[in-house]
Image (tube, rainbow, N blue to C red):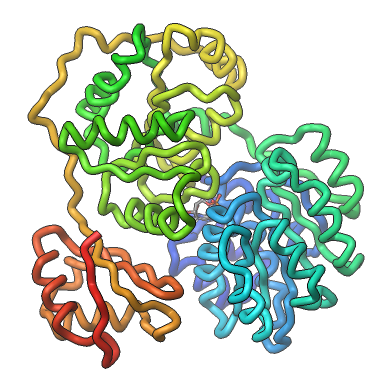
Length: 460
Ligand code: AMP
């Protein structure tokens, strides 16, 4: 993190105060390098990864320009996945808190279309979504793009990898030529170069030095001789690190499910996230992990992008990824925004080449360590301080975080410190409460009202 604070920028006092109030006192390197240009409406190509503070870099830029009184879509953000789009929308809402009534709508594929059409009929200021679904809305004239003055391509390399090139170009054909275009990409292959030449106007290019990132993630690699040793290795690693929040990456869904079964046998509570899950279950899984109700998330790479969990202290590669770049994305889930973190990888007997490729890619050499002499401590447990209660009412029922907090404190008598993260979704809500008061909270909420209504409450 640099020492430049936001006061050096031509931003409103309210915006700066709000940034400070959410803990953004100093600019991250990507913000420091890009904001002076983007606030002057210049196009930008930024080579920066998730975790660098890039969302705020473009978020501050587009919110600075936004005319809230004009109820028209003024910014469009294209993301490769629903998870990233949700993450971006969440971060924008946080930064937009200084001004009232900024409406941000997400338009992603894989979720029902009609409600999005309905929501667009009520207008919005900013839309965030995946290219296929946004193109469908544009083609069906569900919104007018005439007032869009900022286009952001987030994780552009990933969007091209996923085959969105044609959709992106078709979307751009709908947009006004006079606009600011900001392109963020972790890597900069030729196809990104081609795309940027066609759609940008004299962009400035900034690149974030990765040396700092390398030094704050402690990476280690352990040798595994037989596949069957992997589970024991993971238990030894967890026992050594005693992490509160860990993501374990496997290359296949089956490996995720098998590992989850093994953990269950061992009495460890885990969440599993992969593409076989329905969108609702994927969202719920991320909520339960982010609010610290479960210490372990086992995932395939769908989770790697856009997963923004505070204080994730350990990433484990159960399988080494086939692509070295994916390795850096996975381990980048820890050590967010200047914090430190740990990444541990298991290297099987057939993974020697992958291990070498990774070392070449990140330009570091590692010793391959052994866990053979370490014993498994069978008494060891990873428990969570929090549990989650599900409430079958959300935004649609006009439930707000304050209503749930009020019901738990004023009506049921819980202490504020016993209540953790509250997530309000369209049709349901989640509240984390400390394990020792979960029964009291569950009984109290089940028998009482929230905002004058009775809701069904379940423990998750
Ligand atoms: P991103 O790269 O946009 O995914 O951001 C990574 C994390 O950094 C998010 O949790 C942000 O809330 C956080 N962040 C962004 N900018 C700042 C800042 N200037 N100071 C502290 N944290 C920040």
